Image (cartoon, rainbow, N blue to C red; front, top):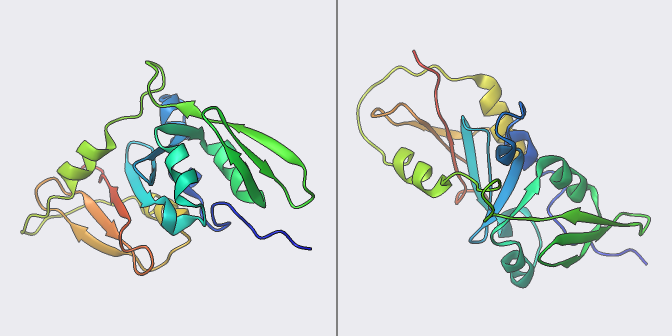
Length: 185
């Protein structure tokens, strides 16, 4: 009898949005906060409701709140078939052969593990202002952002005040908040 998958959806690749150069180790993590999964490298940021990118029950989404997971561990987790348990310190999951693995969760309250204030960043950049502006956009940032949700054809709004590129997605991801901080022109 085949076990029904209970996990993040396989096509979700939030780890593609995380930092890669190890200058800011905390940015190599995905933060779970208030029912959202947040990933950023300092230039792009995505905040996505966990209910859109997984079939996790609310009780398990709540257990993730306030925790971080390293991007490579998230990539490993997504490959697993079933999340068996989420507790304060770890996620226990099984692969398709029923082999059990443990993935460490980090509490987002230690001095060395404090994720930047993504809410403040989103609030600032998502303020829509009218006007024309020139923006230089790194297309690789856009590709990584779209690949995080396995989406094509995003919708853009360029904020003329600070030239942030606000990226929106179509159903079922219309509640996702994403932005790309542009390069200087």
